[in-house]
Amino acid sequence: MKIAQVVCRFKPYKGGISNMAAEESFGLVKLGHEVTVFTPLYKEEDKNFISSEIKIERLGTFGRFGNGAFLPQLLWRLKGFDIVHLHYPFFGGAELVWLAKKLNASKIKLVITYHMDVVGGIFMKPFFKFHSKFIMPRIIQCADKVIVTSLDYAQTSNIKKLVAGKPEKFIELPPSVDLERFFPVEKDKELLYKYGINDEFDKVLLFVGALDKAHYFKGIQFLINSFNVLDYSGSQDALYRVKLLIVGEGNLKEKYQEQVLAAGLKDKIIFADPVGDEDLPKYDNLADVIVLPSIDRSEAFGITLIEAMACAKPVVASRLPGVRSVIEDGIDGFVFDVKQEGDLANRVNKLFADKVLREKMGAAGRIKAEKLFNQEILIKKLVGVYEDVLRS
Image 1 (spheres, rainbow, N blue to C red):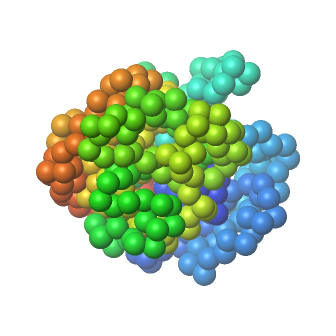
Image 2: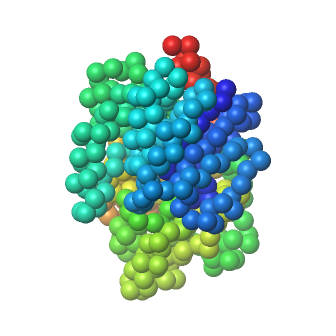
């Protein structure tokens, strides 16, 4: 098949939608399909990421806002593909895909992955609310099939009425993890030394995610504020010392670093140097517990959770729709009430204090990753979705 993937951001940018589109694209190529990725050209240095496997078309923008951009070129660039796969949200791109579909309904077979609702901050919230009510439903309705990362999220989201009205159009297909990259190994001694971590005494809580404005919802500010509740090392009876390691880059990183300095936590909260994709499994394996403290439903799944599970690490995450469906609470991790410092601290410290529990939950997580999130299996299921669309 000749497949077009249309996505608001793509590698080298690191974010959930970008990562999922990339994993799917490379996975499809491995199965013998031809993939072209259409994405905006935000920065010239983005061109430095090239691939011999997939064709990446970075299109010049006619107006940009956040991780969205107006791309009228899509009206004619999407012709000749067997499948057009749009990753939503993509403001300025999704609308053009919708128009291209309306103009060439018989020729364009459209699959949409609905990744998440968009909430936004105080200034953008009215626009997102208007878009979700009046424009987004038209985009979703024009698709031949709609993929959701979890039905739990979809059935509580802005598309819940569309799901209820035509459930056969919606397919649950979660993100996947490469089990040959993410698997349990011993903690990397060089990284322990680099970040001043004592493997016998320090317990490492790890966060992995983008630190830019588009990912404000990851909850880093809340996590930093929660640290004094998490950290028992102030007690002389402490059996361990907590280190929080934050892995990620973005235009909010400096702000978070300043928050840590102001709180006097620079020796306990560590910001990792930029981490390449090839080294990320080493960081997952450096952790005792991996946390996802997201604060609103802009977080719909949490790929970092399944990567942690693949490395046999217990996870702790906010009790949000979609996110909560990844974790079997008390079996492979814990969920905690959103923005509740005490609840987060209780869950994390219970794991820190019990090595047997950590190992038990980690082992359960690895089994789940192999069973439910195996990349090889899920890419084949994606191909099955495409084939169903073509047959219909």
